[in-house]
Image (cartoon, rainbow, N blue to C red; front, side, top):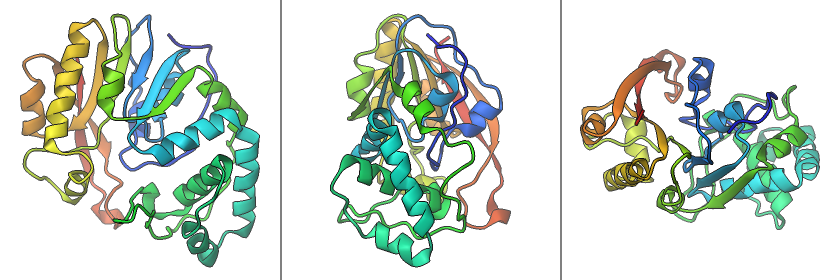
Amino acid sequence: MKRQEIRVDPFLKWAGGKRWLVRQGFKPPAYTGTYIEPFLGSGSFFFHHLPNKSVLSDINASLVEVFNAVKISPDAVFNKLKDHARKHDESYYYKVRSQKPRTEVTRAARFIYLNRTCWNGLYRENLKGQFNVPIGTKQTVIFPGDDFEAIAKALSGAEIIACDFEVVLNRARKGDLIFADPPYTVKHNMNGFVKYNQKLFTWDDQVRLRDCLLSASERGAKIVLTNANHESVRGIYKNDFTISSMKRASVIAGASDARVGTTELIIKNF
């Protein structure tokens, strides 16, 4: 179910995010229950759709903490973010990147600051669990459309938890809508970004996700899944789901001339 129309923009950039899907006018089907999104990222589809009741989750506990901090303390997070904006330069970026803030609010503001100023909005950690993405070329920390109170209002009906996708998908029942946007991996590696994702989300995870979505579908939930347009992915969904593709621009490559158009799969059970 969707609340009254208000405009809320995602406050994070996210590699693999679905702003392009929203811009192309893709709309979710009608449903009567809970909106479930097990791979939250920047939440582009959630913020465009603005459901009244939702369960949002991600395996990235730091990301989930940011959403909960903004939901509970939007003004405090935004004020601290403005403090980062006033001090921003290259040396300050690396100083903040090396810090470990003690409170939820300061950790959230640090996360958003680094996300907005790092390279391509990529989230990557080293073996010690430390964020290690270099500074990017964009200098904007505070955007003209920033409205953290509106973001908090949009999140007010959401349960936001850090967990494996299977935990929330097992909660789906008749009338619910699942929007799943997992890290893209394929059975046979396709490109460097997919290869990187294989460290986060294996092919076995892809198969496990398919099994969870199939079970949820059998319980009556509606499913929308985005995934890599690859024969191995099509192969595990073709017997039980409807598969189509949509074209988008790739923004992962380091050089602008390498950012070519590509297609992604839209997999549904309706």
